[in-house]
Length: 134
Image (cartoon, rainbow, N blue to C red; front, side, top):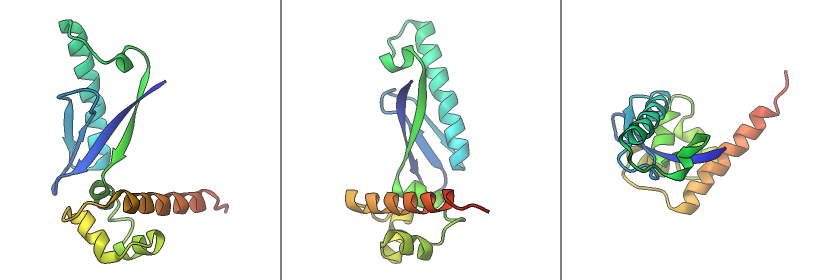
């Protein structure tokens, strides 16, 4: 199954998603779950409409595909702000709490190294949670 990457950004009041491989296909939502649902529907509609109109579509849409979501640091930090405090994220990522606030507010964008630290910290936490047995 082919993967179609979808980029999700946070705009300050909602989430915006687009699939770079499918020009002009965008969607928004007030929550992360909503924007994922909306972009899935938008991609399906875009592909069906293009086929019906005889317009070309990228090869990835000619077979089975799945959407894989790539969140910006701002989108990730805002989506999970009710789950993780910036202080807790600072402890698991090693990134200064104030810097995390800047990323969440969109004042600054993390460099690649900082993005990897956020991802690695969350993956480590995820692995620890998966290993919990009650």
